[in-house]
Length: 190
Image (cartoon, rainbow, N blue to C red):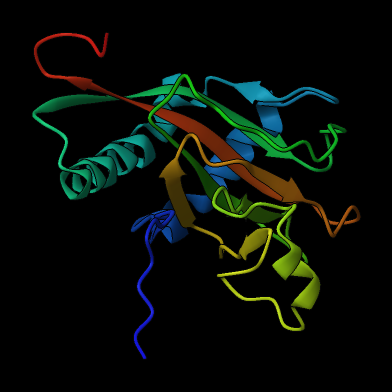
């Protein structure tokens, strides 16, 4: 028997090609600029991150082709650094509807990184069939864990609920979250 998905949630992953060369500089910039209990916002405006965000925009052109988007302009609309050493924010589920795509870049991780979880938007949590599940899989899980290595990038449609779970509060983990806007080449979305 063949299984066919009616709807799917695409998640694209890649590795930043020059990460090993740029890693120490990126961490130094972050540690020099982040202050206790603050998030470093608008890192996409920082010159040292320009090659990373150019790469992310290149990936987004590929993703946009897969979606069948018309000629377009792509821009990073927001970004912020999240470090578990400095950030005491709870693990809230986020949905970012002002962007077309959301994403994360893993800069530094310990063995038990803040894992990225993508919530299954197609699963009705009131469905009685969930009571029969013995082994979770991509068809019946409420959340799917995405494990990124250092230098790893994940991008997904911004309507998808997502959150991070911090399993290690002793060692520093650094993630860069970002939003991507895609606009028609000649006009606006509205």
